[in-house]
Structure formats: structure tokens, C-alpha cells
Amino acid sequence: MKNRTLAILKPDCTRKQLVGKVISHIQGAGFKILGLKMVRLNNESAKGFYEVHKERPFFNDLIKYMTSGPCVPIVLEKENAVEEFRRLIGATDPAKADEGTIRKLYAENIQENIVHGSDSDENAEKEIAHFFSRKELLEINGWK
Image (cartoon, rainbow, N blue to C red):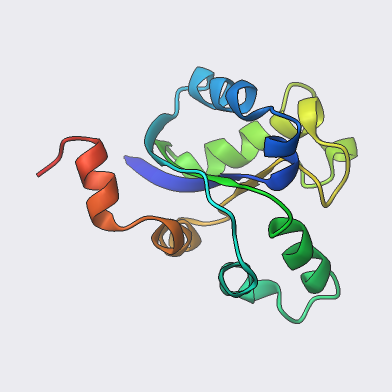
């Protein structure tokens, strides 16, 4: 069964002008893009998105980083999308990521790691809704 996941190309990805390369990598792995936009997160939006991490010591640094420049949220579809995308992007720490993964190829460190990927189907739906309305996704694909 095809399902969806959310990718976010993070500020370091946009700053390094790697958006095209990363999207090409994602599409090359068989993902269909259902929605894509460039946004600049403000504090409120970033804190809402990362609320699950609010008690963790890195929370404030994460918010500062995610609001430091434009991001590109992308809704992706594929069989086992969440699991397949997490495999494609690699470990959060690029030093521990497998060869050929997006983070191994492009990320510099554990915080500036190029890309976010949903960690469960349930979170994917919540995260997608943070950035995209149902109407946006349906119209993009010509669904009625």
C-alpha cells in the first residue's frame, strides 16, 4: 500500500543550494512528489512542529537553526514511504549514516543534517498537515 511521508529540506540544504540535487536523489529512489513549497519558519511555527522535542536539551538550538533560513517541505508518496525515506536519508548523525544516503553525501553534522523525515505514519500525517492543506495536495495531483 502506498503511503505518504513528509520531507523537509532544511536551512543548510537551501543555503548550500543543494535542493535540486536532493530532490533528484529522492525522485531517483522512486518517490512521487505530491506537494512542495519553500517556506521560512517563524518561531511559533517551528516550536509547534517540533513540540515533541520541547523538553529536550537541544530544543532551543533546533528552533534557532530551523528558523535561520528557508526550508522546503515536500509530501512524498511510495510503498512504505516512511521507512523507505528514512533508509534513503540515513542516520541523523551523518558520520554514522550509510554510504550513498542523503545525509552521508551532503550533511555536515548531527544538527545541520540537510533533511527531516517523518518517523511514523501517524507523525507523517500530522507533519504533512502542518505545512499543507488537503486541498493543496489534491489539486496538485488533479484529484477530485
